[in-house]
Amino acid sequence: MMTKKEARKQFREKRDAMDSSWQMKADDLILIQFQTVDFPFLEHVMSFYSIPEKKEVNSFLLTDYLHFRNPALQLAYPRMNADGNTMDAVLVSADEAFTDNEFGITEPIGNAIIGPEHLELVLVPLLAFDLQGHRVGYGKGYYDRFLAQVSEDCLKVGVSYFDPVERVGDADEFDIPLDLCITPGQVYVF
Image (cartoon, rainbow, N blue to C red; front, top):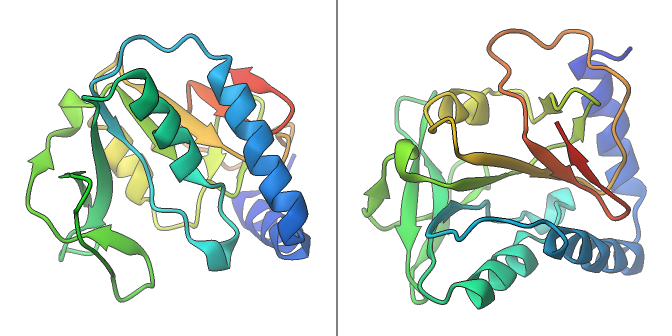
């Protein structure tokens, strides 16, 4: 069993140790695993803007694939609200402008907000996850608060370069579990 704090430390170190060629190969393998999932027809998806400095999974490969499956797909990205505790899903177009917020997170600057209840799939960034589908994020709770608002049918899909830990011991009722987590070697279904 591992705490969230321990998992954050361990998996940040693992990410920091990755070289770029391994990361690119792992991104391709995650895409291959992603393509094996029999997703329903999707019209509204929220992704995240991968942060290269944090060595996050390349979400753009996954959203490009979803656009290939449905060219009319409406894609949203998260934007933190001024209250500092919540985020919105902002629909973006091909020519949408993005900017970095005060934390270095790239966000859309548009105003086309889509309610969480309208999303059919949310791609969720994470540092680690466990065999029960609990994710360990960066520790601010934005995604848990957001995911608590999506419909029951919305797929919550994590992506990770690494296999799960057995159990995150301090997961609580506010931690919203994933439905799937995709790694280079496997699709985990919860």
